[in-house]
Length: 204
Ligand code: AMP
Image (cartoon, rainbow, N blue to C red; front, side):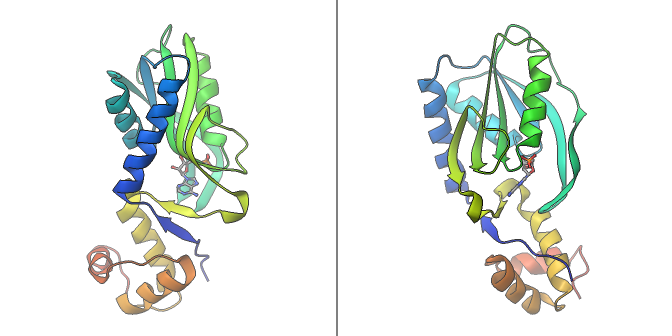
């Protein structure tokens, strides 16, 4: 039977609060960045929200790959696509949503360093305390004993489809799946959302 992770659904209000806190921390640091590197895909929305709050005009992208499907690491972290633009002589902030193992951000920061930025810092909304890499800034720390899969708003439908598919192995149909998601994952999902997923994912 498929494993189901404990989950925490993040709201847009949570996201706004994390972005505010991170932006304040970056402003209190040595210098406001001139370029933000957003890791795809999880770091894109955080990167854009930070750029807005910090008045940063330039965002470049870097594609890291680690977790294949929801809550399942897919082998070692890799950089699937390099920087979409130069960062030489830029005060650079590398942004992601969460450091869990920390492998993706560490790989990304090492890669960006080789592109000779003037300054190099990193930031994530959430940081799990067991991570092997600690970002320069993070908005909230999750204790190592309290690991959860965070369902971010920008990953909601994808996470829901994958979690519901796994939950369906324990009992098919929207009501059974809803109950499993509540009991096994701690996730309260509106029935209408599961019905929507059931239109394109077979949930029986
Ligand atoms: P990692 O390399 O383990 O630090 O994580 C790489 C990426 O996988 C993160 O940027 C997230 O997009 C995703 N991810 C890893 N762990 C979690 C988690 N506990 N909750 C939500 N997303 C996660």
